[in-house]
Image (cartoon, rainbow, N blue to C red; front, side, top):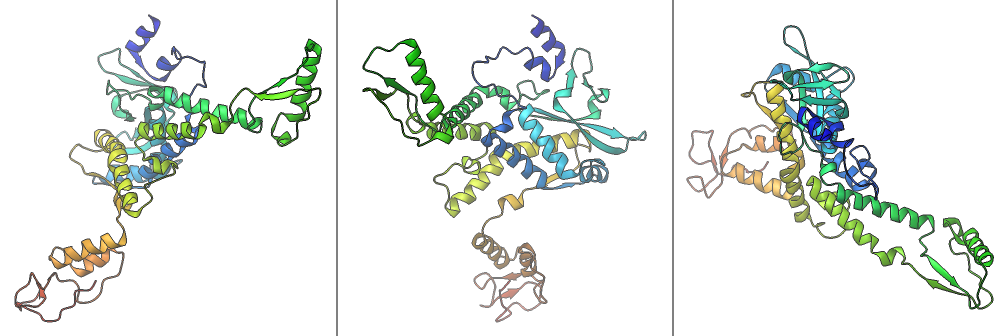
Length: 385
């Protein structure tokens, strides 16, 4: 009843985590601890780093200036990366919008996601913060992860905790096994009936001499007809490698990052596969977060008709062979000049290559046609970049 009442009035981190009924029988993974696991760390930092390094173009001068230099303590790259990491882990990321009395944009001050709540008890919702008190909706830059409500993002870590706890259990099992040098549990079987004191002495002697990685490979000497029986499997027998591979695939599904980018060995290493994987990553993962950033910028920092563009060309740039083929087609069809093609290749312009041309099979008179001249056919015009 208390949980239902609190969730009705306040939307925030503590209302869903402190009163959680999640079991504690396995390693408990939270948004604050998820980065300890390498697949999650790789996925989150990869997405956040790529969002941060994209060139951002905004048609509004005030918003462009603010996003290029958000505050005195955080540059543009750090702000975009940190806020994207928080939304990927906690489901929400916040930055207070500081304006002058005249309404001009002044600063974006990032807040800790766990210190912000959204009060929806009144007719007009507002944000409750520890650092700056109550803030109106237009005073808060708010990035949200997917959710059914649309007003408060749901943490991927909370939604998919079962998969992540399985991964945490695998890590714990591997750690415990390697602390014992990866050796299985054994039973020392004696042909005679032993007293309790004798059994304790044999156990103590074995633990002192053979437990821990420092004692790996130390020979086991048995006397009086005693023998050893293995009662548990080794790491190889448990299929830990396959299980961890499945967990990496799960993290790939949670965040939309191709498993190849998370260190999964095996196929997808051919050039064509790598290019396709890159496009899949941009279209199936990054564009969702690009849209989240774009929509919030238009809602809080600019007008809805302003242009906001994240440049993904660096992430989708094809290989040299495909680039040259595309540029040649554009030049020969007259859509692009040869100097414009050189500019795409980051090459300086050359004299005489500023006019569009047509290929021999497109032009008239059997020769290359230069569309910038009055002559209908210009014999021997080179078609080099």
